[in-house]
Image (cartoon, rainbow, N blue to C red; front, top):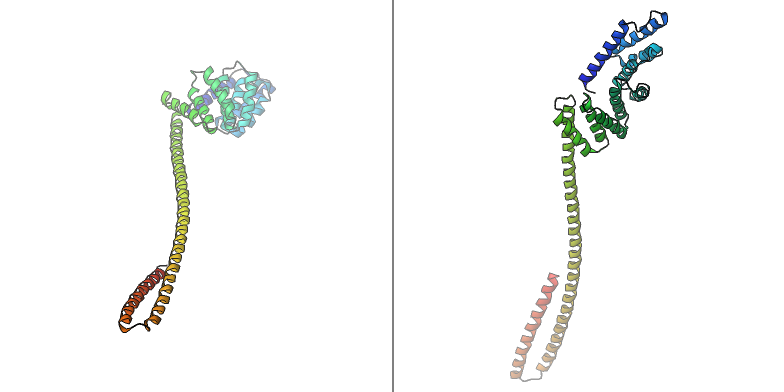
Length: 300
């Protein structure tokens, strides 16, 4: 309930009960004087904003039949709401609506009943009660406040889209209402939350894409490493095989050289010179092959 509205209700209630105190509502009998005194104490506590004491004193005053009226019960409900005793307010609101269904305070009690449901965490019930209030009293001065508490119930229940629509309506249709600034704050909060959710979504997507790319890269590297290792092993096998062939050729050339040198002793000098040249060439070829082998061995 807006502060100004609550002030008006408080002033109205005080005026009503001051008038009752000054009237002949209570007789001059001792019992009525006691009832009047009990109510006077409760009224004083209520006027001073002592909600705890006013609740106790109002209940005491209501023990006298003369004080058990719709106005006194409504004052008790108001004191309970001010004092944040929402469970008691729920109970007394239900009793009021049963006992005084035609009271002029019914609309205010129904509104307070919806708020009490909200504060006790019964958000779905609060939405139903306050929505019914708005449908029944579209011109009521508490209509914007009722919309606000419906929106708060949606907000508390994480139905942000539903809440946003009502907050926006309050700011747009009732910009001068006391609840408009609070509604505007909620709008900004929801919009900020939406931005943060979108950012988190983008970060999550980017993170997932990064992890997927990283896994793909690592898988590719493992494949490449395995392929490179296989190729390297095959290359080494090929080189070793080629080296074996070259070594065999060198051995064969050496055997040929040895044979020719033995035969050289049996030829004439001219033939020996020709044979010597052939031997020299063979030795040169064998030397070249050995150098190639040495180079391959170094590269491995």
